[in-house]
Length: 358
Image (cartoon, rainbow, N blue to C red; front, side, top):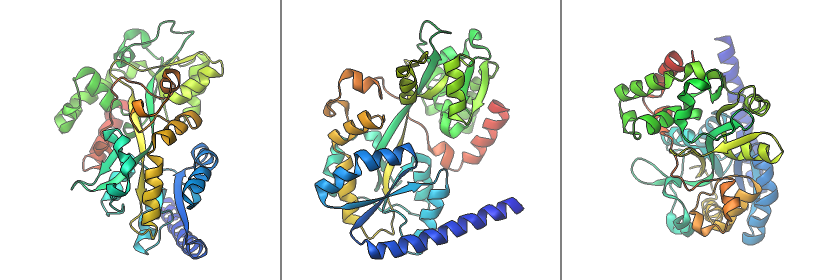
């Protein structure tokens, strides 16, 4: 309890600092668009490859903001919005956080007439409120695929079902959470013909029971991506699920690693551009999002950042090799984010722990 109070106090302090800092900076930079991006490599890449050209092409200055991990950024945005302040005008938001932000109408509805380039987007990258208002536009996307050590497995796997095979005992590394592994969706697509089985508790339990059958084959339920990558490269854990682009970089560096898109498809996860309802920069935010929807910008992100394009392949101009390094033509597995942000989320997480990872 004491720890929880300390965490709450730190979050409150962070919110207050955020409001004071960004409130004062807004006065100093009225014509600057504040854009939140995932921290580290993502932010550095956008600072280098995207934001300078955006300013050059539009005349709109950008102040990039490194978003904290987890739910902390959503908390900051929500608390600041209550005070009429936007720590960032536009933010790159994960899909579960998009749904949670809808509860407080945090996201400003977007006017697609001001975003004509949205016509290039794949349908799954137009995010909407339940009533149909658009609240998010695809920013970046990435794939989780079936990876394997080429020394341990000379022949690449062809299906997610290979993870259930007896010869994979104690050889798998899988992501530890239901909400980032998307193993419920993988299991549903592979063994139940699609996602309809996930529409009820009874169906979810059937999927969990099937997924539990893979437990003898799992050596590591991982939260630390670097830990699994090292074990994959060494052959200690020669198969599992991982990020396609990162596995490709490891292979390019000479490690015995391959990434395979199973016949059921890789898992396509993504982040959306969303605008705080407290922004005073609505026009500029729309210009920015429209700019980011350009096929050539999405192609640049694929080449420079390693993300999969959120627009149709045919408009990107990417070569076959460039496209396959970040994406696939096999129809993807689309996560059921509602399972992790809706009314069943607590129950799903409880059953996940009881039946799968314990």
